[in-house]
Image: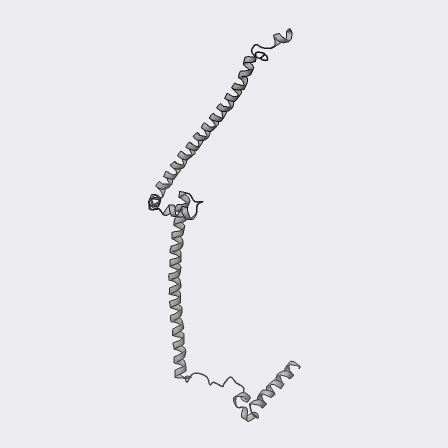
Length: 179
């Protein structure tokens, strides 16, 4: 009997069959209540995240005045169609990057055209200078054309003809190299 006295009231195992049947009902109710609370908490968290995202979008729009104009014009929607991974902010930056890329390509094309025009002008000037120099011939101050040549090549007929001069030069080179 002492063991029965040691048990506190209300904690003894249930011996009533009516209460045992209600335990399964209470367990089911507890599970359903847990699921309901969890789904409500998830919905509340989603609503909070949506409100936070909306507030951040408004802050972004206030810092970037053309954001709303681009959204209204459909430019952001076009960017998002081209790349479905983009959200509104990503589409905004993608639009600006595309505009910068297009401007840079225009500037590059303009710089290339200018460089091409300048190079063409320099080339034409060089050709004109060379033609003028050729038309005027060698000037009085210019050195004689054959002054750098050796005497045997300047007047090969004095040394037995061109073939003899070339053969002598070849023999001289072979001797000098040890062949």
